[in-house]
Image 1: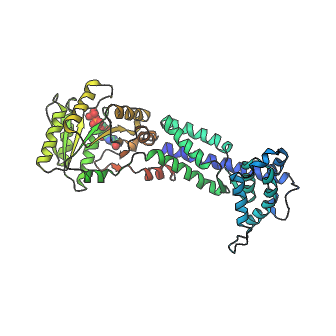
Image 2 (image 1 turned 90 degrees about the vertical axis):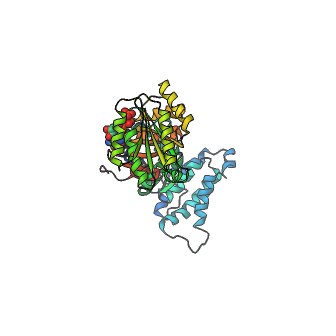
Image 3 (image 1 turned 180 degrees about the horizontal axis):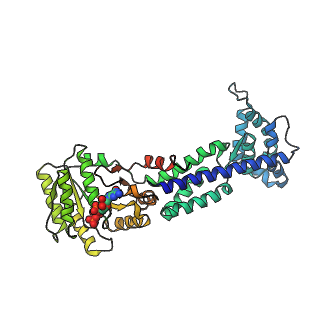
Length: 413
Ligand SMILES: Nc1nc2c(ncn2[C@@H]2O[C@H](COP(=O)(O)OP(=O)(O)OP(=O)(O)O)[C@@H](O)[C@H]2O)c(=O)[nH]1
């Protein structure tokens, strides 16, 4: 599931690591070339002090001096003072020694330098760290954006993800490249989680705590797996001790009654159906009455596949809303439809507000764009993933485990 996207996310992590490794190597090389008169040579790491911090003093102006209280400078100085204040916990390894040595330089440069970014970078480098800058991320982020769009992630969602990564990584100081991986992982994980988890709620407890019968109506276009998902949910709910009645509100398509009747028979669940051409709202109404009379917990109502543009069919949905006032309307679409599924989710939600999505055929989807985008564009959560054709091939959508899965090990790593 979503292997194509997983590989692309792996690639992004590799790209950032590669860029920061190159940068670290470049910094090291350039520091070796420039012998700084300001730098005490008593510690090897101090000789790595980049020349730019010291050289920047030549760019000072009287006004520049007024900016030296900048927080970056303060950070660099306070990092250093933490190692020089006689604290018994003082870390005496070579990097803290480097910090002390760097303090001497920074004291001088901080007096006059108006480029706190450089100071921060200088201090970070002197302590064996690197600072992630815009230019380090530019290429990997561009590549990531392309990869997300190729994977059917909606443009607005891709931009949100990139924005979060950028804000979480820029200016961050991290110990050398071996932990850049952890930084990228965290930024990527947070960025994905933020868009994927939009609107999430606990479906089970919402159903369990609502007044019975809980009526759930399923909408979506033809052939995406509405009827199959309803059948899967019958089993899902019954396995949690809830009783269910199915209602066939698809009075439009020839063969719809036979199809759902097959499922009802296999699952041994009551089905309410009318003749083809009947009024779907009347079917749902009868099902709710049946549930009330028989103390049934949940009514699951199928509807005809429709486009949000089919006015008569959308009018049917409005009538169902008026007649039975469902507790939830769930939009069903297939993950393999990618951008189309995302677009339809948006349009259905605008035409007849949804409470969540069931995303089917995730087992056949390599891209993952719909899974990542639908909650963000509708503001309503993905509640279930269909992962196969059997009744138990349905999973509660869990944003955390989805992110873990997307960032987990793949065969290519
Ligand atoms: N691989 C896979 N196939 C699925 C999944 N869910 C449904 N299908 C298959 O998709 C096909 C269409 O499913 P239906 O349930 O008939 O779709 P529908 O939306 O009710 O179709 P209409 O009644 O025509 O609107 C069937 O062959 C299902 O077995 C899934 O999660 N994974």
